[in-house]
Image (tube, rainbow, N blue to C red; front, side):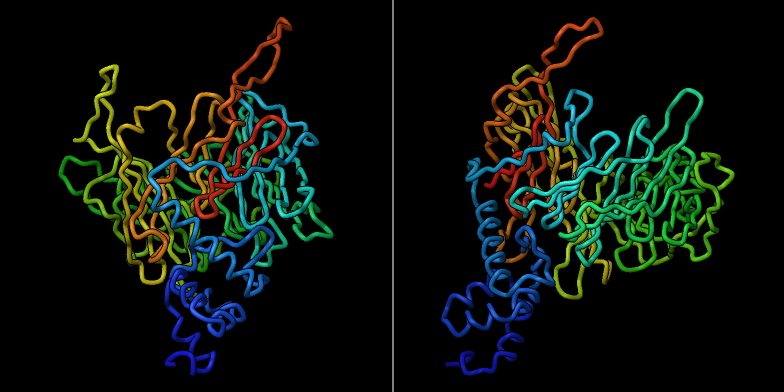
Length: 505
């Protein structure tokens, strides 16, 4: 009898720390254990690889029922195993379409949706001077479109964060003005209601002008960090309306006598810590390690509104923490951009931050049919445990035949979120997408692999967008459409000129 005679609380304690696959196997052994697992969400919530479970649309971890969580876990295991074990290209199993004609979005070669965000049942994307937010679980796909204050800006950068309640989406939108007589930026923060009865209601909580030069925007309420082209950063606490421009002191000695000794870090990538007021920094020169700085608690109040003048911003130099300084698993400087793909919870008390990079193997060349030499490609994921600062690395080597085949398109360098890869594709030019699939944990594919997807007809049949030249002549332009693939749920999202397809694999 063994475990069957134990009280439920002891059985749950025994299950703690197992894999999702283990818990599902236990639940399938007999009705008693199945009832315990289905009636106690912690059976799956306390697994060591619970990050591999993708919740169904419309549910949050706090509101989903035990049976629904079990069903989601079983599906996630099945999808992950299928993606890890199959060497063949996967065919679409089902497809649905969401009509966006009401948004009147004028697709084209230069203008198409970007800056995607997907969490649970909420999809958001930026198009020109607006952000559209869609509730996917609604039978009619409820959507709203929010206009930025500066509608005539040259470009926009957007960051998102859904609050833990699941009822508010924060949007930080940076409008970039590049007119002849003005070079500046305007930051706007909006809170969008996701509650069913008030969906789309928007509050504009913060607006401020600043000098130009922003490369990327990062949001972790209440902080917004803007990574500048100059290698410096600007940080804003939008709720307290405080902020500074800062540089990080380089306290690392030069390794060689003929190397330039930098006084400040040349900041390449930043990430705001999810729990503590600190920032993680990857430097473009010392990119074998991660630096940390504490967010100042005495940032001055920002009293201006629309001015782009730099004199409104207090400038500081901040020393990084002496420890910790986690090391990346390469001994020399990597000539490749490091992308932070997001945070994963791997246990109730442990979170890891994933870094992705696509690198070329210098000593492993491939000769293409037209006698060109190209490098083999490796996609790597470095997972930093932000509890004990240990690092784990996984690498996926891409098949050489794939790299020289124009029918294939590799996803990996454009990351919208953890397990969410995006790419713009010319319709009719490709047949297959490839995305890296890293190890989800024991029972979810013990080896990292790659997923090959046969594209749906909406991407393989040539389509054209119609426009007119300066003389009024009609032009047929081949359509460039954005796509993104959710590896954990096995869903491909394809945006065409009238809406988007949701394709299940």
